Every structure is written in structure tokens, then in C-alpha cells.
Length: 84
Image 1: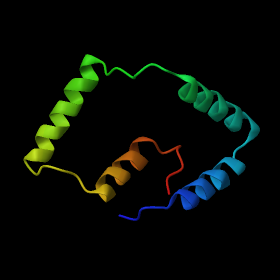
Image 2 (image 1 turned 30 degrees about the horizontal axis):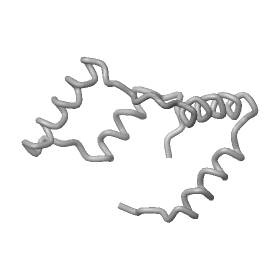
Image 3 (image 1 turned 180 degrees about the horizontal axis):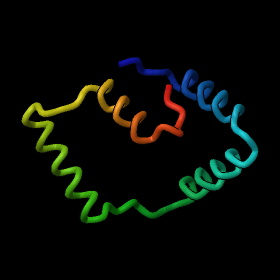
Image 4 (image 1 turned 120 degrees about the vertical axis):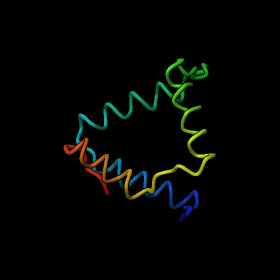
């Protein structure tokens, strides 16, 4: 797994943000502003807790999926999204 330096990460974010359409940029700004100004912790719902527990149990048994298979499934399920 490749780990980016802080400078590389900032540059990557800048480039991606710079390529956004105005409407996408406004949505992102609202989201980031809300996230950065929130003092509340995110609390998982019961179904999210159950899903995490289930995933951890599968993982502990070695029942995992490859990145490639997850990406293929996501591309098929969400065909209108852009995947890299």
C-alpha cells in the first residue's frame, strides 16, 4: 500500500478540488465546513454496529474480499460513478 506524504496528499486534494464543477465545489464546501465545525462525535446506528461486528468476525476467520473484487462489484452496482 502506497502512503502519501502530507504534501502529496494536499496536492492531490487541491488538484481534485480544482477540477470540480461549481455545483460540486459548493456541495463539498458545505460538507467540509459542517465536518470541520462539528464538535459532536459520530454515533453508529445499531445496524452500522452490527455490520462492523459482522465484518470483523468474517475478517478474523480470513473471509475477506480482495480490493479488486470489491471495486468490480462497486463499479457494477454504481455504474454512473467515476472510479479510478
